[in-house]
Structures are given as structure tokens and as C-alpha cells.
Length: 118
Image 1 (cartoon, rainbow, N blue to C red):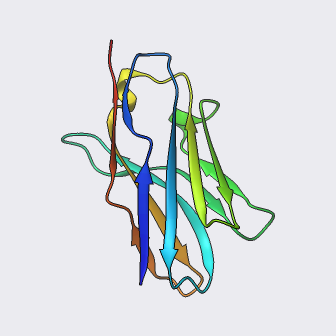
Image 2 (cartoon, helix red, strand yellow):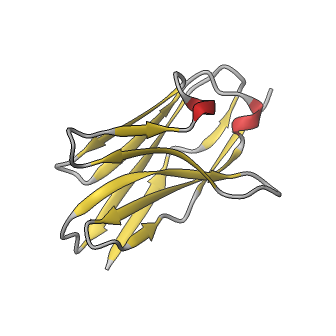
């Protein structure tokens, strides 16, 4: 069983920064990708960023976070990070970490609240 534990959410002013962490533990045979989704009240969950373990660590970002968010991973610690800069009120949401194995199984974190407000 794989568990994902997120941390780093909180309240920040517009223009500020936060760094989210996602630590994976348990029996992890092979990781295909890790990343982040978010869900704002009344909206569908949307993909923010992902990082593949193969292909030289290819990254993928949603257009609305490009240039502001950066995803990275510490492979030795099975931990993914999301550095969020220039935060906007519309970035307010619950952020969920995910992990996809080479076998196609998906795992999710419990979510961490990010609130951007003056």
C-alpha cells in the first residue's frame, strides 16, 4: 500500500509564495509520475503539474500556472515538491498530490488547503 502525505499549504497574500511537499511511503515498486491537482469550491478537479520519472524527468504544467509554479522531485526520498510563486486569489483551492505507477495504479494524498487572500 502506498501513502501520500502532503504538507506546506496555508494562507498567503497575493504575490506571495508557498512550497507544497508530497512524501510517498509504503511499498512502491515503480513510479511513473507524480504531480498535483487542485479543486476549488464548486469546480472540477484540474491538473496543475506532473513530472515523469522517465524521459529525463519530463514536466507538464497547466497553462495558467506556467512561469509561476515549478514541480520537482527528490527521487531518493520519494518526495515531490510544488513551488508556487506569484500566487493569485484564483489559486485558492485544495491541492492534491498524486502518484502513478508503471502498472497504472493511481494514489492520492489527502489534500492541503491553499488560500490566497489579502
